[in-house]
Length: 230
Image (cartoon, rainbow, N blue to C red; front, top):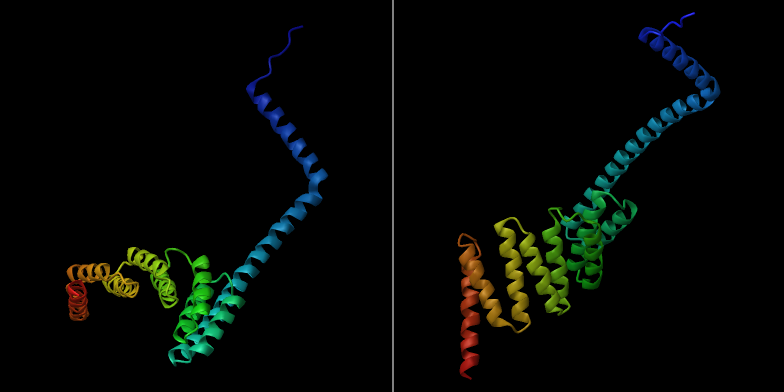
């Protein structure tokens, strides 16, 4: 008796029946897990929704708190503003508003004459702020100014030079280089200070402060010549 060959159609049908049977068996064995997984996915979506809304609400609260502190800052109440900004940064840590608050806390402490606290806030801000943040140039300049006030002129020079490299706009570069020239002058490096002033005058001829820099350079040059003759 000859054996009939199994056709491709029969093979496909047998494979389908086997797959269907296995699927039915799997569903019976794992139905509880599948239902749990579906419910888990629904719960996960709910948690994500709650988290997103929590973050939005938290960001709104941080923005409002930042606005209130900025009003105090603009009114010249720097001691109060510094405390408000610091509290905001601690309460809403991890938000963009917190990073900005740390910078403004440092600036407020600096304007209020508390250089040590200003440096503390600026350094905290540097750890948290993105390197691409537009405030980074101001932050580096602020840290440099703190070191300058503490008569740590080498550190001030380093920060000012870094800030100048990060600056995108001419007016920023002019202000940072002006600070660098001052720090060099205070450090007794007048020749280097003159070179920086010359660089500002040559590179930024349209600066509204050009006349000021020309006058200051002439003063430093006259002082240097007088010292050389004595």
